[in-house]
Image (tube, rainbow, N blue to C red):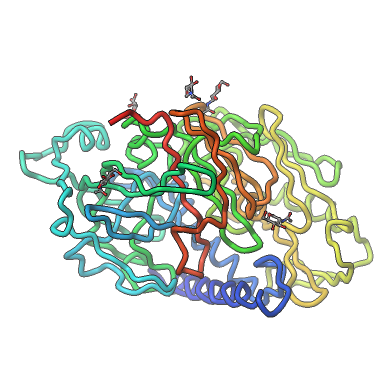
Length: 482
Ligand SMILES: *[C@@H]1O[C@H](CO)[C@@H](O)[C@H](O)[C@H]1NC(C)=O
Ligand SMILES: *[C@@H]1O[C@H](CO)[C@@H](O)[C@H](O)[C@H]1NC(C)=O
Ligand SMILES: *[C@@H]1O[C@H](CO)[C@@H](O)[C@H](O)[C@H]1NC(C)=O
Ligand SMILES: *[C@@H]1O[C@H](CO)[C@@H](O)[C@H](O)[C@H]1NC(C)=O
Ligand SMILES: *[C@@H]1O[C@H](CO)[C@@H](O)[C@H](O)[C@H]1NC(C)=O
C-alpha cells in the first residue's frame, strides 16, 4: 500500500466516522439522508471512489492471477455463518468478484481488529465437524483453474490467490463446509438454513487486507457471475436461481440484499453484456430535464462490451469529459444567476436556499438498451455541503481503459433508493425507483408462496451500527427435497 492509498484510506475512515456521526446525529438533528446533512469532507467520498477505482480499473488493465477476477472494495457487508457449529463471519458483499473467502486460523497477516466495531473471527477447520479440504484434483478445483493443476498429488489442497488492483492479496486454499444463512419462510420471518459451499481459507493477506483498519472484515463474498461464486454454487446444488437484488437506502445507510425471485416491485430489465468481469449495460440515450445530451459514439460499443458499468460499491458516478461538460452546462442552466464555488478543488458547489432541490434542478434520465431507463433526481445527485450550500455529485472520469476509451461508472449516486435486480439466469439487470426502508415481495419457487421481506428485519446486523449493513436474505427457490 503506498502513501497515497494510505491517505485515501484514512480519508475514507474519516468519512465513515462522519457518516456514522451523521447517522447517529439523526436522533438529535433532523438529518434525513447520509449526504443531505452537512458533509464537509467531500474529498473523502471521492478518495473512497478513487481507491476503489484503482482496484477496479485493474480489471481492464492487468491480467489477474489466481482465480481471476479483480475485487473491488465496497462498504457493504453482511453476516454469514460457517462451519458446524456455525460461527459468525462479517464479509463484504461485492458484486465485482466471484469468490467467498475468510481469514483463517494460523494466519499471521490477518487483521485482528476492525474499526467497524464487530469482533473479527478466524475460520478454524479444527473447530468445525464438517470442514473438508478441497483437493487439487477435485472438480471444483479443475474447473476453477480450467484444467488440472500441474504437480497436483492426491492429498494436496486446491490453492487460491487473488491479487487486487491496489496490490493487496489474499492467498490460501479452498475448503468445503456448511454455510448458514437466513431463509425467508414467512412474511418478515426467516429461519436459519444451510448448504455446503466451497470457499477460500485465507492464510496470508497483504496490503489493505492485512492491516487492522476501519474497513477490516473477516472476508469478502463475491456476487460476480462466475461458477465459483456462492450464488452459482447454491444454484448448481439446485437450491436457488441465480437471481439477486439490492436496495440501498441513502437515508439510513442500510437496505435489502436478497437472493431469489422478486415479484414486487416489478422491474423493467436490460440485457447484461456477456462475458464481462463486471455488470455492464449499453447506454443509448441521456437527457437532462428532457433535453438530450450528445453522446460520443466510440464509448458505447456493445460489441466489445464497454459502455456503462453498474457498480454499487462506488459512491458517486463518473462520466467521460464529453458527457460531463454537457451535463453540467445543462444542470447549471436551470439556475443561471447562481454563484459557483469550487470546493476542495474538485466539487462544483453553489448557494441555494429553496427547501426542495427537486423543484429547481432537472432530473437526469439514462436510457439503456431494451428501453430501460434510470432517473437520477436532484436530491440524489446534489449534496448539501453546509447550510444553503449544495455541491454536484457528478464527476468527470479521469480514468480510461488501456486503449484510451472512457468508462461510464454509475455508483450509489444513481443506484440508491432503487431496487436493482440481477438476473443471471436470463442475463438481465433491471431496476425500479423504490423506498428501500419499506419491503419487497419474494416468491418461494418450491411452494409458490409469496413472502414480504422488510429492510428493518435486521436479524443479521442488530449490534453493528456503522457502515452499510444490509439485511441479507437467501430465499431458497426450487429447493430439492432432502
Ligand atoms: C443444517 O440445517 C439442518 C436443517 O435445518 C440442521 O438440522 C443442521 O443442524 C444444520 N447444520 C449445521 C451445520 O448448521
Ligand atoms: C459453469 O457451470 C455451468 C453449469 O454447471 C456449465 O455449463 C459451464 O460450462 C460452467 N462454466 C465454466 C466457465 O466453467
Ligand atoms: C427469465 O425470462 C423468462 C422469459 O422472459 C421469464 O419467464 C422468467 O421468469 C425469467 N427468469 C427469472 C428468474 O426471472
Ligand atoms: C418508506 O417506508 C417506510 C416504512 O414503510 C416509511 O416509514 C417511510 O415513511 C417511507 N418513506 C417514504 C419517503 O415514503
Ligand atoms: C418455479 O420455477 C420454474 C422455472 O422458472 C417454473 O416453471 C415453475 O412454475 C415455478 N414454480 C412455482 C411454484 O412458482
